[in-house]
Length: 209
Image: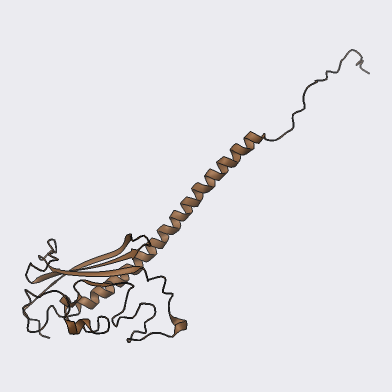
C-alpha cells in the first residue's frame, strides 16, 4: 500500500466561468445568420423571377408566331392598288370590324396595338371561344395574367434582307418587313420585352387572289 501522506491537493481559487457564449458572441452570430438568410432569400426571389420570365417568354413567342402566321396568310396589298406604294394601315371599314376580322391585307396590320392580348375577333385571350364569343365563366383564364401584356405590329418597306426597314412609309419596293413585339407593362410604366419576331415578305406578279 502506497503512502499518500506526502501529496498535497491543489485547489484553484477564482471566479467561476459558465460554459456557452457571451452576449456579444450571441449577437454577432445572430447578425451573421440574418445576413446569410437575407442573401439566400434574395437568391431565391431572383431564381423565381427568372423562371417566371422564361415561362412568359415561351408563351409570348408562341403568341407572336401565331400572329405572324395570321398576317402572312393575308394578301400583300389591297386588290386594285399599287403593291409598291400602299399606305400602311386599315381602312375605316376594316377598323370598324370586330378585332382583326376584316383585316385581309398585310398592310392592315401596320401599327396594330392592343392591351391585353386579343384574338381575331377582339376577345381577350383566355376568355375567347375561338368563334367570336366568350367561354362560359367557369372555363375562362384569370384576366390578371395577360392584362399587362401589350402587342404591337410594325410593317414597313425594306430590302430583301430586311436590314433597312422604313417604318415611315416613304420607302417603296416589293419587300416588306413585319415586326411583332410583345411587352409586359409594369405598374410604374416600364416595359419588359418578352418576344420580338421579324419576317420579310415579298410581292410577286403571279399573286392571284
